[in-house]
Length: 350
Image (spheres, rainbow, N blue to C red):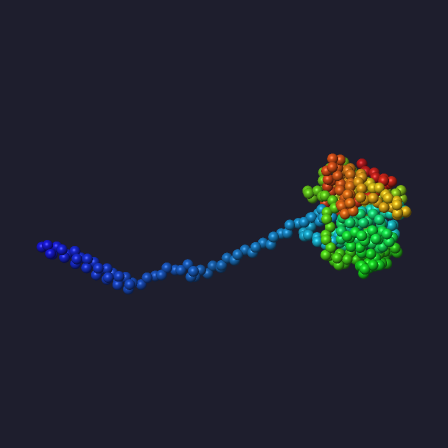
């Protein structure tokens, strides 16, 4: 009885093993359905395409001689030119495109311009006239190019000692100048402005000459004013009248509208009047003293503010400050700088 009891468990283990082997054999004969692979999908839906990366919009930059925003940096040099203001020279070519114009006293109570183009250079400018002894001090802070028709040898030598490129009618850059048949000599020398700027485009662009309002409009300051009357000499009166419709000052000379080559009246966003001393050491040729300081009237946005102007050196820009020494800002736009002699007159409109 003991032996039988000890064998039965062994036989049960053996039977269980046999059953296990049979089960495995049966399972191996049963077909199975494979799980579909995620990489072998048969979906016919179109594949999503990635969105193109948007092209970034360039940040606008500020034109240094206007204070206005432009789409891209202007890396060309400034072009300054001596422009005739004799009555036989009017209307001039290109003044409506200027960034800055300096009006200065010359012989006989007449005036001439140092006109400056950078952000908007027209095809032609003129009439081009001769250099004067104050022009090196006016042009040097701008760098770039100065175009003129010649002048007294001592004045030409003064201009050539600056770092500004001298383009002189009859000199090496004569190919960029010609005489127009529309006016009589000597009031008919014309400069191919775009061509000469392209020729010397390796020259540095100008630095800003004035501070501008960061709000993009005329600063709120000063006393409301309708404009200003000026006289460089008794025989050369001119005026600037505020025009609210255009937000500019309109220019007149000798009681008549001063027009450009298209027939439109010349205008300015800012009119800066500087009271200046005159040096008569060059005989009949007056020299405006630019490295100095004095009284200033700044008209912008229909208001006028009195202040002080100063210029510390030939290459320094003009600084405008108020009664407590704070810098006076201009409205973004073009500017005319009137260099009125101490012997002249300035009268602000009510």
